[in-house]
Amino acid sequence: MRLLLDQGLPRTTALHLRHSGLEAEHAGDIGFAASDDRDILARARNRGQIVVTLDADFHTQLALSGAAGPSVIRIRIEGLKAEPLADLLVRVLEQCGDDLKSGAMVTGTESSVRVRRLPLVGS
Image (cartoon, rainbow, N blue to C red):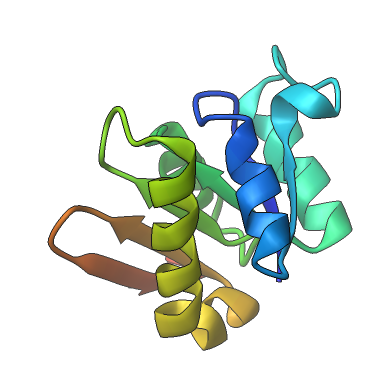
């Protein structure tokens, strides 16, 4: 799976993910540090990536648009360092991989992972 990490996440998380065998890039490393959320979603959609973010706005935009993708993982744990974040993402991908491949919004907290399939229109 291919991941695009949003600006609020530690840049070195992408390195840890690549060491785990995943394809990952950070918005700040590809010139998207100040990009609008819509631009990040569009890039992820065009490149077959899953957006990883701390920002609830990505889920809101997907819900309101009725879009079927890209998938978004929202982490609701502030201050998580790069290596523990990468470990968490590996576990989320193992648990929710099929949903994320099909189009989903995933929210991860310290105690749970919630999955909502896309699109949300009519649900």
